[in-house]
Length: 155
Image (cartoon, rainbow, N blue to C red; front, side, top):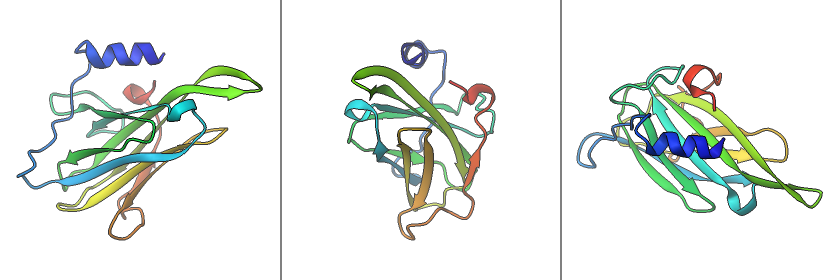
């Protein structure tokens, strides 16, 4: 499954989210490592859309990836609800055997111009959860919503 996603990301089947120029009005989204049971931290892939079904358009699609403890920064167009699809994948160890493990979440919010947010997907032993926090308050933005993983958001 991870191979299929990677192929989709590199073959042009999926567009790319059009990040604003650093000099244009924008918000910043920092993707950071969460509590994680994947070996070597696994890999997290991020997509950004303007609808809850993750329909690809000329302006939306792949946002980027992060691996292990490395963080990544993305620029977002402010004042428009964005749906961030996060998929974590990798290997986990259970009773001495490695097995593939994947989980996906979708969260949405309306980023404010000049604000910096952090997105964290935790992958404990069972399930996974995504959180977005405003770095200036340490809390989720008022517009934050956890969304159903449906349509084009499904792995």
